[in-house]
Image 1 (cartoon, rainbow, N blue to C red):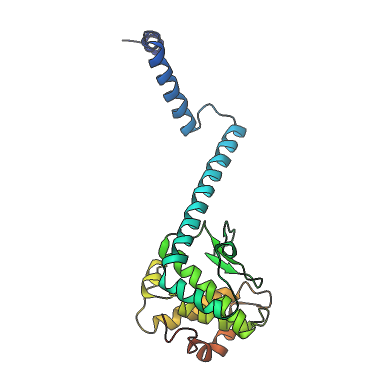
Image 2: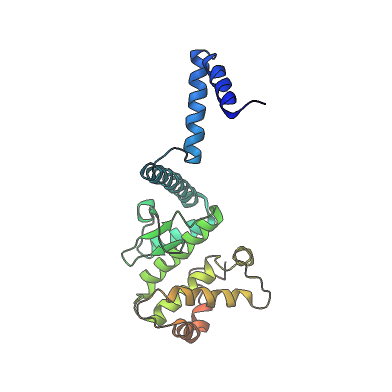
Length: 234
């Protein structure tokens, strides 16, 4: 029976019998195999490789986000509709005002009072999700330019969150199904209230979940039925 040392010696002989080109191919394969498995690398080298991999992933995700955003700005009916009404409100939509960025929070986008619409490329899972997120944040921009939203006023904040969740497509049955929320009785209203309250939790004036829900409930009826600039819920 061949011993491990005999097998090793036979493998070495097979390797030595290869021509220079085949040796090069074999060496490259072994190096790639070890790299993928992290074999023979120091902790610092592993950390460097992990950082490089994350950088490449972030770059790819950001480029995909930008490509999807640009396509939607030119082709999406709801985005084109909101773009036109924002223009009438004094806000010009451009891709520069809608940067794709990496977000640490569990959110797909955000609106800043300075007019920037943030798209979180590491939280967006497809074209439909990106479209809904863009529409959601554009409704915030519309409210800011037409109703003078005071963001630290919880009732103001609740109202624009209710409208954005309801009108953007954020609470369609399909979107709720993707989140694992399945309901049939007034599911749209239930979704809108839940998502509006979740958004309020990020407001520094919000003290608790109950505080957020109370603010949403107080303004829900008037804000939910206000579908401007749409004729009805999208």
